[in-house]
Amino acid sequence: MQNTFSLEIEFRDPILLQLFEGVKVTNKNYRYTEELLNQFRKTIRKLQSGTNINELKSFKSLNYEKLKGNLKGKCSARINKQYRLIFEEIINPLDKELVEILAIEEISKHYE
Image (cartoon, rainbow, N blue to C red; front, side, top):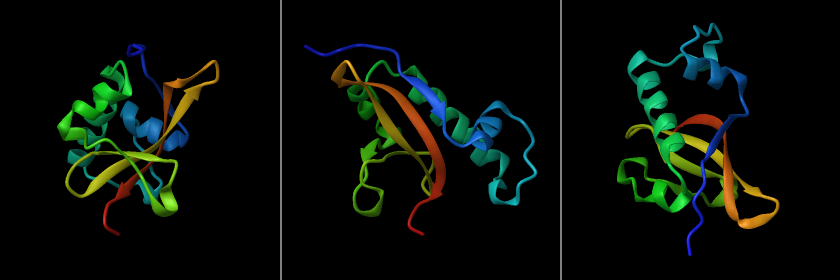
């Protein structure tokens, strides 16, 4: 039997929250094109729309995956062919099978 729940999105980086909300950011480390920011917002909304991890994995456009190597313990979802969103799945302490929060950490330029 599969659990259903609502995924909560948490932003570990407050600047990413500002970008998601459409706030103009002056930090040069967060200079992205408007097209990329729109794709970033669309990816976050798609993650929010999921009721469970298996459902998110079924969205082929997300390319949802658990990462390996130096990013072991993190997950990613594709923003576009060049960028991905890095986040951590936070498990419900009362039900170890239940992921309830996706903690967004960074926008990463893939293959760099």
